[in-house]
Amino acid sequence: MAAAVAATKKEWTACLAKSGGAPGKCEKLEKELVSTSKAAGVECCVAETVGLMRCTGTSSKANGCGAEFLAMRECNRAGGRQLMQGMSGGYEVAPGKGGLFSSAAPSLVASVAPARSLLGMKDFGESYASSMGIHQGEVRF
Image (cartoon, rainbow, N blue to C red; front, side, top):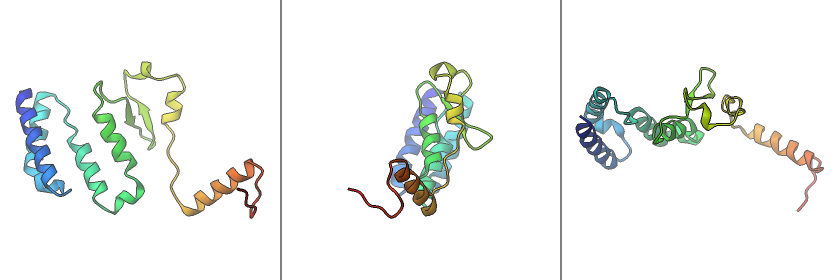
């Protein structure tokens, strides 16, 4: 069964490489890989791969595709996922993986990155400069 999954994944990966960034062109193989891997109990990161390809192939990449990259990284960890998407939009330490992190990790991964905006960057820059004794409008080199 694992050999069938490996063969199907190899075929799907080759199709994706030739698809020009359009995972929909390989939908038949994708469905076959999903069903074969599910029956074998093997994680092939299909949803994560397609999600990342779709994000990086559209205007969504302007947002950095951070969630998609993180999902792909976690799916491909040799020892299994260490972080999982939480209900609040942040992340949680995966069940059974708490021993890999310090006691402060749960509170750190639960935070959500702030939205990017010009005003947010400007405000941060002014606050940071102020903390170093540089006042608004003042320039130092």
